[in-house]
Image (cartoon, rainbow, N blue to C red):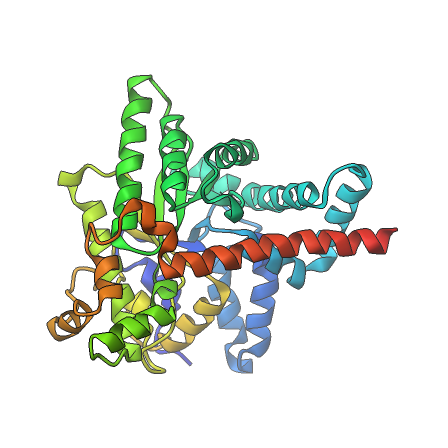
Length: 398
C-alpha cells in the first residue's frame, strides 16, 4: 500500500496553483482504461485505485475533474477504433450508409470530427463552470498538410465549428505557425503541435502575440480563447541523430543525459514563456514523457513539477508515473537548474544545442528537425489507417 493518501497524479496537480493536467487520449476510452488499470491492480488496492482514478475524470460529474483538458490527434483516434470498436463501428457504418458518394478520406475525416465532438461534449460542463478557462479539447488538422496554409486554415475553421470548447491543433512548421497567427487574430484558441525545441516554441509564441495584437485592434472577443504550445520532449530525445551527434562530440548519450535533455528544453521554454518582460500569451504544454533514468525515476514529470504549464499525460505514462512515484515526494522543481556537469556535456552536442538555443534552428528548418520528420510521418500514417478502417467497414457492409 502507498504511504500517501493521495495518488501521485493528485500530488503533482497540487505542486503549484498554475500547473494543469490534461488527458492525452480520447475521453471516450477513459472508462475502458480505468477498468484495465483496476483489473491488474492487487486485490487489496483495487478500491483505492478506483477512487483515485475517478478523481482524474468522472463522466458522471465532468465539471469536477482533475484532468482539465484533452489532447487528441489521428494516432489517438485510431486507438479508439482498436479499444472500443463496439462503440465506434456503428458511427462509421452509419456514415458509410448515409454518404455513399463520399470518398474514404472524407468519411474518415467526418468520423474524426464525430469522435472529437463526443469528447468535447463530455468536457463542456467544465468549460462552462470555469468560465471558459478550462475544458478545452484539442482537434488536429490533418498532419499531412504541414505546408498547405489554405487547407490547414479551412480545416481549422471546420474543426472550430464542432464545439465552443475546441482548441485547434496546428503543426509547428513555418506555414502552421502562420495559420496559428491567423487563427489567433480571429479569437480561435490554438494548440501548436509538432514542436520539439526552444526556437520552435518561441516562434509560435511570437506569432500568437502578433495575432492577438491584430485581433485586439479590431475588437475581437478573446473571452473564449487560449493558446498552448506543445513540446514533445521524449520524441526529441529518441532520434538516432541525437546519438550520432553525441558520438561526434565524444560523449556517450546515456539514458540520464537524454532525460535531462528534454527537461532542460522544457525548463528553458517554460521560463521564457512565463517571463513577463516578453509579453507572451501562450502556456507551455508538455507531452511524450518517458520513464527514467532507471526504474525509480520519471524525470520528465518530476523535474518540471510545480511549473506554470500544462502536462498532458497518456494512459501508458500515467501507469508508469503512478507506479514509480507511488511512494515518492512530488514537489516544485521547475526552477531548479539542470546540474552544471550535465549542461556542459549537453551543450557540446550540436543536436541538443540547436534545440536549446533560442535561435538554434531557423523557422524554415523546423520541418527538417529529425523528431518533426519522424512524428509527422507517424501521425500521417495514423490518418491513413483510419481511411483503411473505413475501407474495411465498407467491405463488411457490402
